Image 1 (cartoon, rainbow, N blue to C red):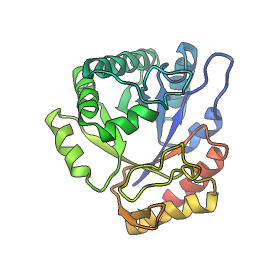
Image 2: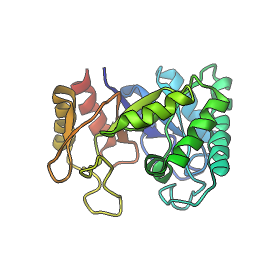
Image 3: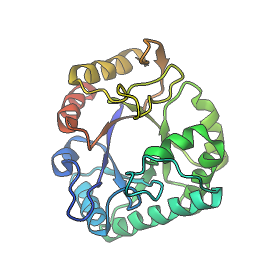
Image 4: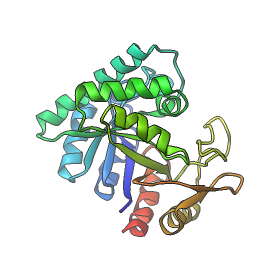
Length: 243
């Protein structure tokens, strides 16, 4: 069964992002921000508590250290720096999970770090290394792409299991990568189109790229961005389709 995941816990101080309390009861996996692109200690604590209340599996959502850019800008970092920032954020979220007698089950990099991981083997290995040094039971969520076997083999060398993610509300290029957010058509805004894309994936095993090419994708989970204007409506609709 394909599970719904959502990027959450992205408020910061008095600045509120998303409708976490309304969304949490409709998803299976919550990707919780860890302080580098969004969130703070109080928000992380509250987000973990909310996820546990609704029996939602918790994932760490680490990013480049870029609050101003919401983690959507690439940064030049060494492999050691990548591993260190991932470990720092993973450890922060894990401390709140321990407080609430729950755990971090997987890790999904955020924004530019996620995209860079899919393009740069060195970054991908640095993230795998960080997870393996912390807890090899934690899975890594990556973008599902046609050549997923290459990523799977590398992850296996670190004894890390992968979760394959498809985006319901983002457009794809012909090579299986996401259309850059700098492009006007990067995000899918129409609810009917979002639901139709997921129905196609569930029934036929593919979605179409922005140019109409069929992309055969392995899917463990579907993502809807929690900061989207129609996130709650999208998630309610997709929950009905997937169930």
